Image 1 (cartoon, rainbow, N blue to C red):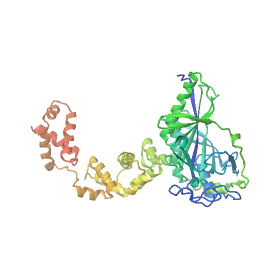
Image 2: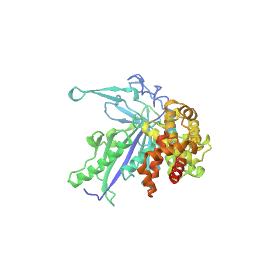
Image 3: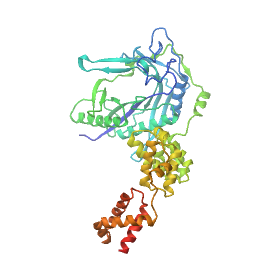
Image 4: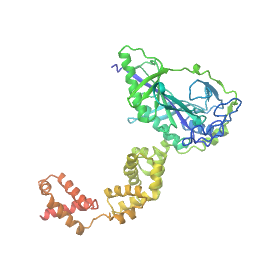
Length: 485
């Protein structure tokens, strides 16, 4: 396969905005658990004679996002009709923005493999979401149902420049963008639930050239992993096509996650295919400098800024600080726990990045769910018990799981289960004698100079005491007993 090509990727991200009502009507935007077609009205169904009204909160959320992405906010903006005859668009057009969006010309710094690059943001614009299709059956007997509850929900689109050069960089861009949206509080940005959706444009070109081959749009990716895998496949497919003298065509392809490949869906549309024209039922929107300044004043501390503060204020490494600030929930949990603990900032960081994150990842939950079961004050109590030597780290991890499962405090669990650490020589002497007597070969290895054998003997002591022995005290007592013969 020819490797003298460069991959060029641009992403189009759609994020549902968290507003109480839909984009152009009073229908509630919380449709996820509603019965099909129960969150609708003549406006979001596009019935004749109705008039849309702009959702101010959605506009402000979009401007807030554009500002966080270093975009310029034009003084004048407008909405347009985007015409296309898809089954999920019952009225035959979508109210969107075309040539006068709310945000233009921004950027975001993204790190990949230790290198940070500035990736351009072409535009940030606002539109309405479409209906959801529910497919039933297969083949000739298959059919689709239309649920209009999602139709009209505020949808923000963030279009990047084609600045990404690898699937890994595209994935990292998405992860950081989602983090920013959650910090802003403008979207839950959950890819699996469909509130954060991505279409990827990918092409290749000869290294050193500015001329791109045919652009392919990839759809149907519902996770960061899927985006990465789809782009990896597509970059290889396009190179292989050229190696096989197969002409590349501009098209839309769908990602089949179960088989790990893209398939052709249709030829790629151009802007003129949508027959854009100004939305006749909505006046142009003026965005005053005062309005922009009011919105800018609401900008929170964003991930990059918080990461820099964590290194300066708490003395954390860049790695630890960026890990803790990747999500707002993790950063908040860390700082709340730190305020309630007497332990150093690094120690609390180790707990959050280690046992806590391990439990969250293993359980497939988020920090919000974790903190509901183990609030910061509960974790601070467990950290203090461990720091005082009341329990060792191995026991602490067990207690952490019990705290999550039962809702009980660390102090009550340690007392209830008799998990207090054993450090006194009087208590450990008998256990040491049992370990030495039961493991003569390990004893012989240690006495012959094999230091690894001591770790085995300590492990046996920990097993015998059900994890309650202080490892350092155990090592000292075993060594003393061996010297005594």
